[in-house]
Amino acid sequence: MATTKSPNEDFSMDDFDALLAALSPEDLEKVNDLIDPENSFLPASDRCKPQTTKTATGPYDRSKLLEFLTEQGKNEKDWDHYQSYTPGEKKGKVWQAPSVTKSTQEDDEFIVSTEWDDVLANASESEIVELAAILGFTGLINQVQYHAALTDKGLPSNTGGWNAAARGEPLKILPPEPDNTTDIEDCIKKAKANTPEFTRININNIKEVSADILKELINSLKENTHVKTLEMANVGLTDSIGRRSQILGNRVEMEIADAISQNDTLLRLNLQFDTLGPRVRVTEKLKQNLDV
Image (cartoon, rainbow, N blue to C red; front, top):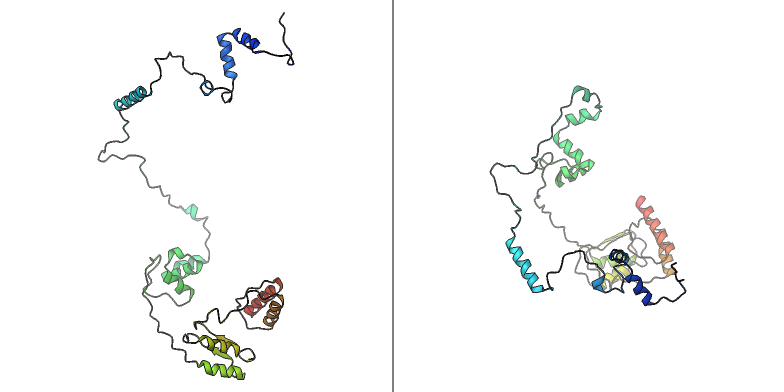
């Protein structure tokens, strides 16, 4: 009667060799199939069993193998990847125009007529172009037609018809603006005197103004209560003249917000508030002034 050893008993390699010696070649092949090929304890040469039963022709010689492959590649004929040209021969799928089915009287019964059918049927080409511009069909009209329709100026005669191609327009020469002859020294005097009739200061495009004159003009408005409009575009005003502190503080921002809340004509203010309360108050006040 055969006996088996418990797992706790010692198992020597002699017993293992005796067990393998008792197995047949077929049994050894089955055991070999159960071995994990990725087992790190196996050498790399034994992880994959041989897949061929042919007898070896000799030892491995790399140079002879490369010579054999090179000679075999030269003797084999390449595949033909092209076909010779034949006049009049059509290759591939020939395109055919889809068949157009004409609408019958029964199909026309399902088409509902509207009041716009007569309007579009009797509309001229310029009216259709203007309608396309209003509806935003910019791909069917050029830029001149689009702007002419939006500004209600009427379409020029040379803009082209329906689906006109875009083209370059001649440059429109505009006359230069007249020079600004405002006397800045006189403005400073009137601002300091707080003249009631002096409500607007316009020094736009006066470039040859020194920084000291601009500072004096701005300082003259500190106690002025009648000037409502101050225009200083393109006068070379630098950051050193209009510089203010980067961090105003809560108290200063609250005072600015209180002053702006009493102003009903201010529309824009380029000033960054760090405090949430003054920022919200100024934003709401500017919105109210824009809505008026």
